Amino acid sequence: MRRGLIATIATMLCAVVAPRISLAQCTANGAPANCGVPGSVLMTAGRVVRLQMGVGSTALTAPTTSDFDAGFNSTTGPTLTVSANAAWTLHIRAASALWTATNTSPGAPARANKPATDLQWSLASGGGFAALTSTDANLISGTATANTAATLYFQTLYNWTLDTPGNYSLSIVLTLTSP
Image 1: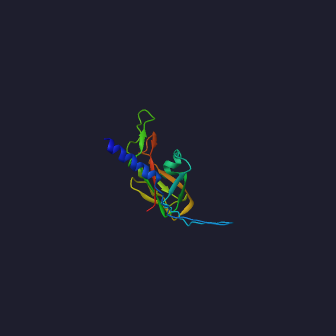
Image 2: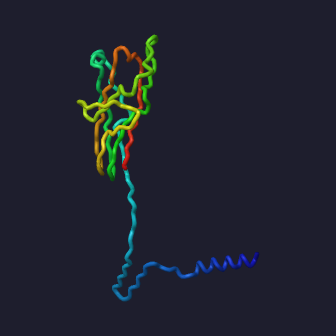
Image 3: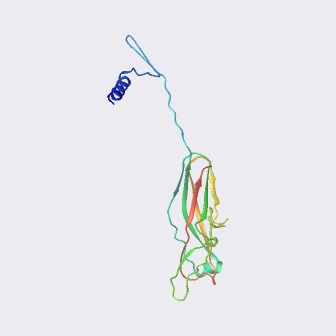
């Protein structure tokens, strides 16, 4: 036991007093003396993407009789800002196939089967609306950018005989990817 301890201590002492080997050395003599040692650094920059949203929740415009007659109304949604150091795509989808409905009027239950497709989205206030589904749809894409901003617009569809009084909500999922 004692012999093993002495060997361990001797090994430790050799490691401490052994001269260190430098990969680069420099020696200068005289005045003025200059010495330079070349070196290098290495950095790996991965893909970096960021999505910022003006607000986390959008209150849709409550429908009026004119909206029910027209079959829809419109709401300006959040502004989305993407920053990325590579190509990117922003996707949109509903978190579920149906809205969550809460009763607000006795004798008139809220529509429990209001489909997510009753909410439509667009990047233009005047049209080109697409129905929201529970499958990812390409919202917008681009190349490396410090900040690309887009405003999301919604149209909510209404039907006199189907859309009963109630509080309705639908979660939306925005997914930013960089392939």
